Amino acid sequence: MATSGGAAGGIIVTVVIVAALGWLAYAVFSSSVEGEIHARGKPFGTWSMKPTSCYSGQHQSFFGVWVAPDLKTSGGREGFKGGIKVMKSPTEEWNAYVESPLECQSFKCKVYELPQASCKVFDVEVRNTHNSVNDIFVLEGHIKLDCTSPEGGAVTANLEFDGCS
Image 1 (tube, rainbow, N blue to C red):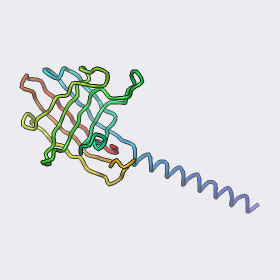
Image 2 (cartoon, rainbow, N blue to C red):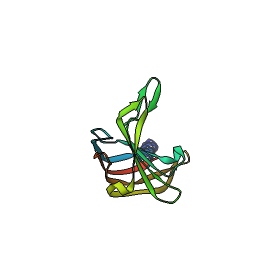
Image 3 (cartoon, rainbow, N blue to C red):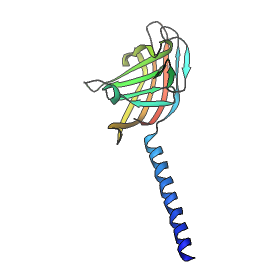
Image 4 (tube, rainbow, N blue to C red):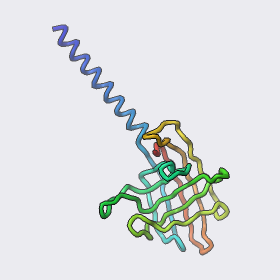
């Protein structure tokens, strides 16, 4: 009798450890995004988006992050429609780009640069967490933008992101 109780206790401990490790892996290696992007006027069009995903720029050979809506499938291909990319230049300056979900052909959307000089607020922080998934470093940080275009349009973003790989 004592043996079966010990075996059951061992199984319970093993299940708890495996569940804890699974939860830890999910918490460390899943991305989360909070906040919204708003665009209005020329040339961006008028739209709002609550991005749900973020991806390390390391996939496309830049240091930065792409904050985007859910991955979509169309014609057997996967991709995103819209979002914001921030990229660090070779001179260590941040550049921001907004992709309009209103102007997409398949997954190639019209991209507008948001120069820092055109922004009342340009607060970008991207941190390397020193964790990696498939040799891609996991990133966290925030993007806060309030930018205008010469045509009178505006883009605002207030985003917090974590676990971007």
